[in-house]
Amino acid sequence: MSANLSASLRHVVLFAFKDAAGADEIDAIASDFATLKNAIPAVAGFEWGTNVSPEGLNQGFTHCFTLSFRSVEDRDAYLVHPEHQRFVSTLGGLLEKSLVIDYWAQEE
Image (cartoon, rainbow, N blue to C red; front, side):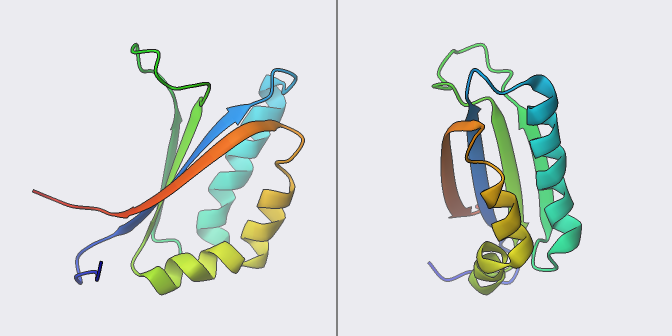
């Protein structure tokens, strides 16, 4: 899909942590993830939160992080940026699984 000038490319990341991951370790990951917005100029927006849905359909995913980009090129620059790579390298021992989806935000 080609983007229009007002569209935002969203990069949604879901984390499910291992049972052994402590609350302090999880909080540190969330805080570290949040630093990427200021460390990587390509990131246009960042928000995150924890699951509060009463539906019980989260399949173990507890944390959601959404980054916004102005273009595919900005998203791609983020993916290979050394700070993003450093952050990803810290996750292996604490994550049970992750899920990532990108989409162009649609407004109706």
